[in-house]
Length: 371
Image 1 (cartoon, helix red, strand yellow):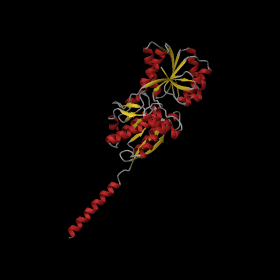
Image 2: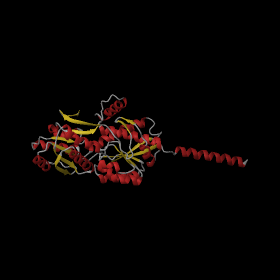
Image 3: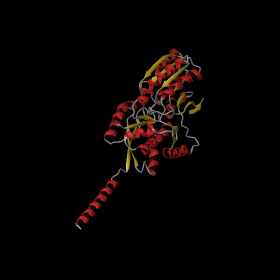
Image 4: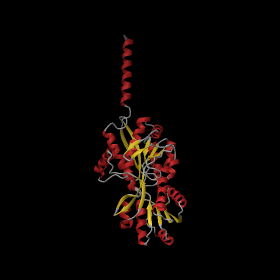
């Protein structure tokens, strides 16, 4: 009798332990976001975070990720690479996240990459464009295409569409600025052009008169500009004040900042960018646009779309492979033909994607697709 009673008690204890174990199972998944809510690229950082939050709201209104609600832990690196390292270290060691969406700036991605590999934490950047990110590490991904192709498109536009043979190049002294500069220089020369002036500037400067005076002295037909929106805005404004009449082409600076700073001096600027169309008839796109516009009062841009897609990419990787950093990494590498609001993409062996590009030109204060 005592033996039967003891077995009954043991069985009850096992059931209790199992039940306790089940109830203690994780009910949420913590994910990091390293954005640039302040600093020189704050508009990009804000858009990325808004896109991520839109996706998280959708997930948490449903089943989350494999039944777990998503908890976002947001860090602002203030557009500073050193802060990005601190932010990723905190998220990896204190918060124990396995994946981080961001950083936004290319220099921040490059500085954080060694930490990602050391801690085995995935970073998935929706905005980093520097060509060097391709080889930054095994845990480094981006769903924004490498700027290498954009740089080629910029050189091609100058030489083949604008028929320019003489140009100048002004570039921001950061990872992406230097990366673009090297590719543009080689490509433009390959197409028969000459770069009579190549000048750098520091991130965040607002006075470009010294560089522009040198440009004016060279009298080029065309000027390549690589910078952030406000920087490009000031550069265009001051170029017109100095009487420069040449054509300008820039990297992706689409947004209100360049228009607010440059005013009418921005007219005619050509940019190259991965193409996101918020007017697409795709039901997926229109659902995203409606939710985003309803919450934030404006249309989503490329970076908002990439932030939104990045969240769903992390979800797909976790559902397919698991929740650890290595499993998320493997899940992203295995992700093929992911259908997001920004098109269908797959990650290659370097964690890069290929996306369609477009030329846009500022006409009557608006960015308009051009050939």
